[in-house]
Image (cartoon, rainbow, N blue to C red; front, side, top):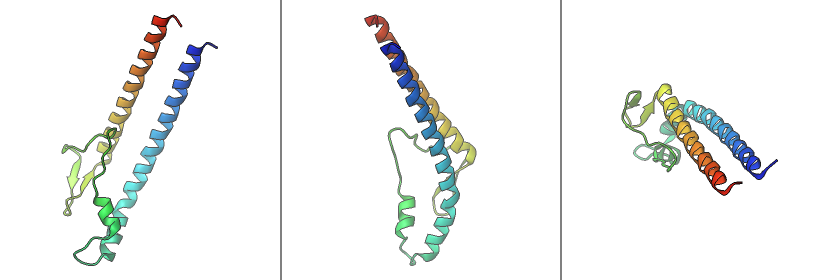
Length: 123
């Protein structure tokens, strides 16, 4: 097997791992969203009045990452009385699908770059 074939096989293996990771992440996010309401109810009931519990404060802390799409006010987004944003399941699926599509596009672009370099070098 040539080094080109080995590299392509390595990229395909990495892509499969990324696919599995995204699938596991999707499952984990769904489970966490299912448990979030019960955790919020428990922490707000146990917290002294006027001061949120550490768990509630952490749950309200905004998290951001360069590879995660930011929330935008669009259809399927609701805010409850506490000002917390709640996304419909359809909206969550759309966001995850967009992130997955962007990842696949980036991988395809990298594969094209790799192949074009191989063609230029003749190897």
